[in-house]
Image 1 (cartoon, rainbow, N blue to C red):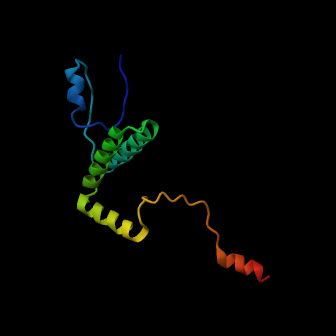
Image 2 (spheres, rainbow, N blue to C red):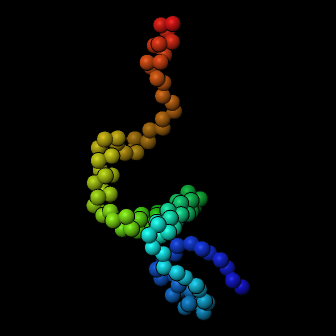
Image 3 (tube, helix red, strand yellow):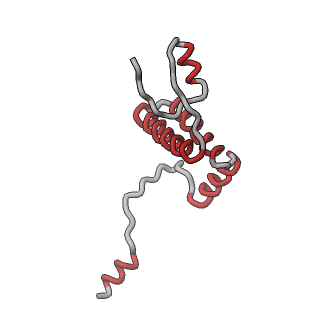
Length: 114
């Protein structure tokens, strides 16, 4: 029986398939098609984490993020610098703040003056 996957997989998956006495057909992606598949893989792994809350899925997400960085020519150190800058500017998520709403006070004052 043939099963169609059409998705990006980890490097050792084809050998694991062959070791299980199965045949697989693969191709090597590059450029925009590789980036597109990385983006799809990111969404797939994120969805799996949300559904399962399995820490292994976070490891998969991290692996995909590292692959995206490499494909885009961005170092992990650059990403970490951006993360720290955003942490400094906007804070993190340690205080568990849930924003319910925001009111534009200037427009309220304008309404009051009418």
